[in-house]
Length: 113
Ligand code: 5GP
Ligand code: ZN
Image (cartoon, rainbow, N blue to C red):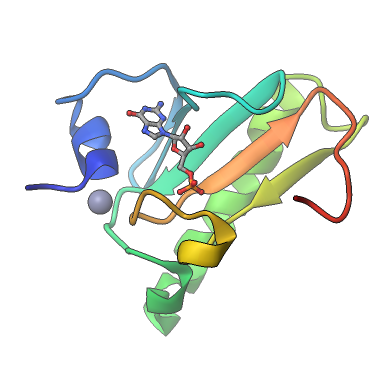
């Protein structure tokens, strides 16, 4: 069966979209861990950060810039926010299509749990 986030990109599974361009899609996390919790994903299926190739460098940069853009729109850019990618089991990765978490709107603790 096709990956969950590929199905969200196609619209087969509904999501609250916040941004889309030719390469990147962003939507609200279904189980938010902060007042702002958005997932920024590439339209290209890449299962973990370990699978990122040289040809993907620009794509990954675009994802970061989309994170910045949404942070500004949500008015958390000046206060501060966090961009996180989990990789594999011990990090807590549960969906194997890479996603950049944009978290903000509250104080973020360090180190993360
Ligand atoms: P991970 O734990 O892999 O880093 O993050 C996966 C994220 O995807 C979690 O924060 C989880 O809440 C979110 N998520 C899982 N399934 C869905 C879904 O069907 N829709 C949305 N919008 N988010 C999802
Ligand atoms: Zn996928």
